[in-house]
Length: 333
Image (cartoon, rainbow, N blue to C red; front, top):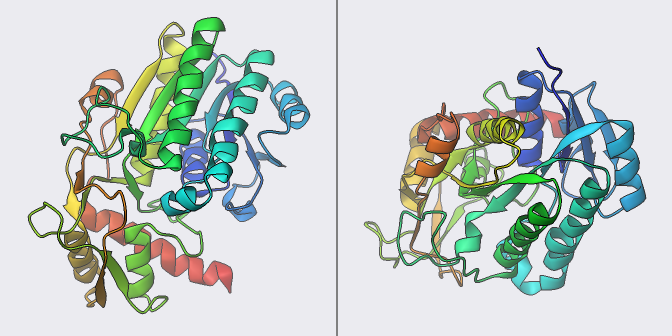
């Protein structure tokens, strides 16, 4: 059997990147990680994985890493992800998500890396006119976060026409949960993800959960989102990698979601159910640019890849997040 190529995971000390590292290792891929540790954690990278602390825009550093480690493919997670911050500080987002991605892609091309998997977002769709949202839906981002990711998608499309590089863009919906074996999870302090916030509140780390708006055009008036378990998402990256290796002439752009949504209140009810507690909820004003409903049409990924979600159960997603949150309290002591 042919040797599996070594994969460079950028942002591999962060939330989703660290789960991708675990998924790759579980499937027998050798892995290297680069992370500047601004939001990632050194302890999130497993023992034995080659780790470099540094920035993806540091071309000499990245070139040395790609050549010395004989990297065959890149999974690119490094970037900034907070929508309101992107509105307040757009230049940070165009630097971290667009400009630095351009530098990384250029170094990859120069070093002959042939495969590239990019962590994108449903924010590229803006406020969709229909739900579920398919990959062909109009890309009209309404904030610099979505636009900065879309710019990288466009760069990859152009570069792949000019150079021997094939790519897969994965557009995430709402990522949640933690590794079922509690090897990693969402560890950022002050995170804005609803399920993370809710399990923090359940464990007494927050006094309440804010519900931003209860006048949406949805059954209970709160925003509906498509929550995907982070380990299912990580598995999608491994399968995308295998598709790129098998079909070097093909590129892919795929939504990552379950194709069904839950409202904010349904999520909080589920947290109450799993924890057998009642979380304090504060209804607050809607946030600018929040769509009523954002649900993926996931038929393309189900067709293109042998991807079948293992954890498409809201209570299970919450339970894994809760287990991780408890473990995190011990890690931080």
